[in-house]
Length: 479
Ligand code: GLC
Image (cartoon, rainbow, N blue to C red; front, side, top):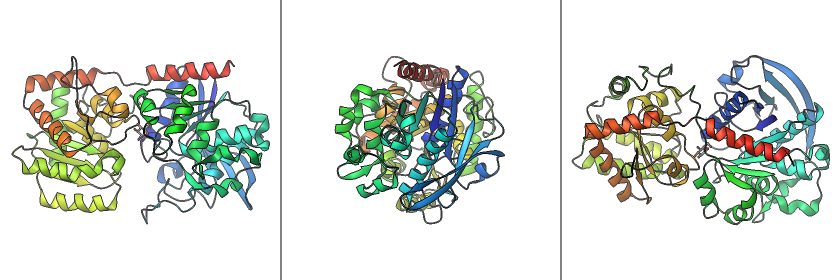
C-alpha cells in the first residue's frame, strides 16, 4: 500500500519532540512489513537538511489569498532513513532555522498559520500534479490537520476526494487556533461548510482535521479515553468522533535506540553485561557533572513546560535535597525561560547534587538514558511518552505519573511483575513519595537488579503497533 505521511517533524531531519521520533520510525517499520511509505516535511534551514543531497523533482505555484506562493519538492537522493524522504521548499516561509520557534527570540513565528497552510497546499498540489494517487494520506497533528478538510471540501482537489485520510493526534494540547477569517487562505470551498473549520468561533486546524479525516488515531489507548475528558477544549468533539477513533501505542526505533550499538553513548552494553555497562556509563555521566556515582541518579529529559510537569521539579528537587536522602538530579531540556533561570540558580546552589543542561542535545540525552538509575516523568498530560521506553531499553527505571501512555507502559513494582514506580496525583507530596520509593528500591540491590533485568527484556519495538496501523489502512481501502 502506498502511504504518504505529511508532518512538521521527522527525525533526524527536524525534531522538536516525540512527533519526530514517530514519523522518523513508524514508516520505516511499515515498509519493512511490505508497505510503501513516503515522508514529506517542510524544508527548514537547519544543518541536517542542508547537508543532504537532493533531486529537485517538482516545481509549482498556487494562490494563498492574494499571494502567489512558489514551491519546489526535493527528494533526498540516498535512501538512508528507510523510506523515500521529501522536503518542500517554500521560500519566504520555511527558510528559517526553527520548526515552530525562532531560536533567537524564543518566540513562535508570527506566521505559523500561513507557513503550515502553504506547506499543506503545496503537498496537495504536488500530489495532484504528479498524479501520485496514494492509497492513504496520513497526517500528523494540527500542522497537517487542514489536509483532510481540503481533500473533502475544496473544489480544486475534487479528483482526490476519494483518498482516505488518517489524522494521528500526538498532542491535543495544541490546536493551531486562529481567527476564523483565515479560511480565505484556503482554496475555494462551499462557504456553507465553513463550520467544519470552526471550533468556538475560531479556525481550529486540529478540530477541522478531526471532523473531516476518515480515521483518527492517537498514540496510546489510555490517552484515547482521556481525550473525551481532557483535551484543552475539544472534549465534546472527541466524544462525537469516537466511532472513527482508536488508540495505537507508539513504538520506538530499536535500531536507533540500542545500547549495544549506540554510537552516542560512552560504553556500549547489552542485556548480558548490563550491570557493568550501567556502572561505566553512570561513572562517565557523574564525572561530567561532578556527581557522586554511588548515589542514586534521577534524571529528567524533556521540554520544560507545564504539560510535562516541569514546574513541579524545582520544589521537588529542593525538598529531596534538603531531606536526609542523598540523591543526584540531572536535568536536560529547554522551555520556559523562568524555569531556565530557576534551574541555573539551583545548579549553582547545589553543586555535587544537581546539574542542569538547558539545551536540546540528542547525544547527551542518550548518555543520560544509559548512565542514570531512574528517569522521572511527572507529566500533567502525556499522550504516549517515548522517554520511558528509551530509558527502559537502556536499563533505567521509570518514575512516572500514571497518565496517558505512561499508564499503558509502566507497571508499578508493587504489582506482580511490576517494573517501575508510578504515582497518581499531580502534586509535590505524591511525587516526593515516588522518589522516596525509588531511593528505597536502589538501596535493595537484589530487587533493583531484578527490575533492571525485567525492563531490559521488555519489547517496545514497532512490531505490534505497526500491524495495527496496517489493519486500519487495509480496512480503509477496502471500502
Ligand atoms: C508528543 C507527545 C508524546 C508522544 C509523542 C509521539 O510529543 O507529547 O507523549 O509520545 O508526541 O507521539
